[in-house]
Length: 631
Image (cartoon, rainbow, N blue to C red; front, side):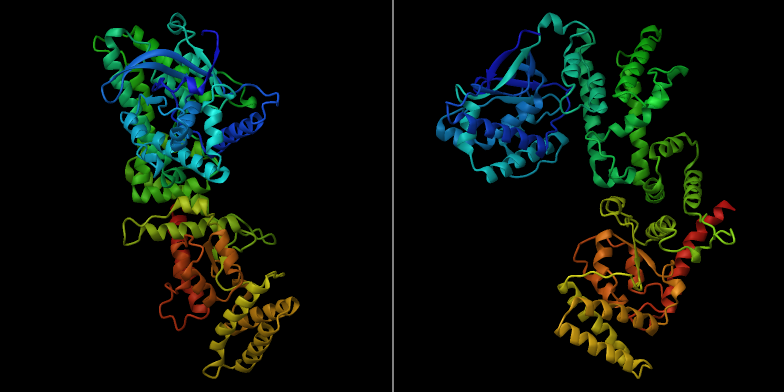
């Protein structure tokens, strides 16, 4: 590369920049945008007093370019610079300058600004000229989405800081300005193996917003400068098609419903296609019974393992191509073969997601499996028809839900009706989740699906007691306590009707509740709270041993669980019905509180023995339908 030089942003305003396909897309988020603007603002404040001994320019990280001519989406010949490194920064500065358009015109500073053209985005020029991202988020592709989001982060920052003039002056001043370190790649260096654009791109990005293995793989996959000039047109067209297919895969995996069907929330790479390379890398590394990348198992895989394996694997494919005597071989055969493997994995994922039954059974297994990567590899290796594959999944589910806990005294395995909250919580969560999933599989509406994305993001793993348990401690604000007392006074009133045998005891408690509402004190609430829960249990003849079993347990999210607290059945039902938190309430939880499972519900006030039995029998039916597969 040529020796670096300092170029102020004002010196770049008439330049044209070109982002080649091997580059990662635009990915800066709120943190990077905010840090950049904060740094510029801090420099502006420091330079307001020229007596301060500050540099005459604030330097961004280096930009690496090489001279290039290209044809844009309008068919115009463009002369400018290929951006080898620095696209994130220059795109962000461009967005900032666009946001400051009115101030620039007022100050007559930089009325025209530089352009950026993305090779993989045919309508890129129109996108930047029309500036539709100023008014709305453009989600037509992943790059425009992130650019639009970045613009709105810029807008939020200025609405808070309100210093447009200062930032314009700092960006575009002749001195005391924002500048970049400018490197130009020499033509003779560019054409050598060690110093091609892609080599520079890979090396220079070490230590910055880290490139993912997927982005490094994309750079290798779409490298166009390895082929003869007479093949350039064909090669570029095919690589452009692959780049478009890559974007389609990335966009599909970016859909939260799809992504969280396959993964948990703790795995969230910036390039979702990384998941595919994680799954393929071990297979590739064992190519031809070799270990392409050797490492000590105890030390774990080296950094960028997937990229390093892909590099070696693709090289092996190219070696095969070079020695092949097939007269019909194509110069892109190695690329096409590897790309087909990648697409095959994605197609399998999509088929799973698209199939109503497989979506639910696989979603269950992936939600509770610790080693998801190994599970997926096992499933990929199965050579089964559709029916046998579904049966295999059901057998795996049966093993996952089968009760293994034994009574400590006898050593006998517990029965379904004996597993208890606080002891077998994991088993209870799995069984209740499967109960909901199996209900939706058999739902009359074929498009009714269990929302694994909400199950994971809203943490719908809390076990709710349908009839309230009596906790050791109760801690509530006065407002919440009064609300609880008022609701439960209304609920208790039911038992004062129709000559109920404990009518007098209930009336006495209602009087106490009314007195406490009128003259609240915390200690009094604790006493009334416990007395109310205890009496309620007597009124509905609730068996103590059933309190923590599947006769009385349902799934909700953590926040809804806190909201329901230890309310009576009818109070909980109304709270779930209004659902002020707007959370997903599992279908079987809704049905339990609406007494769907009871053949002839007599009332909707409490969770009686008939309701409990009917609810449990439905859970048992689902459980047994899987467990019998293991016999």
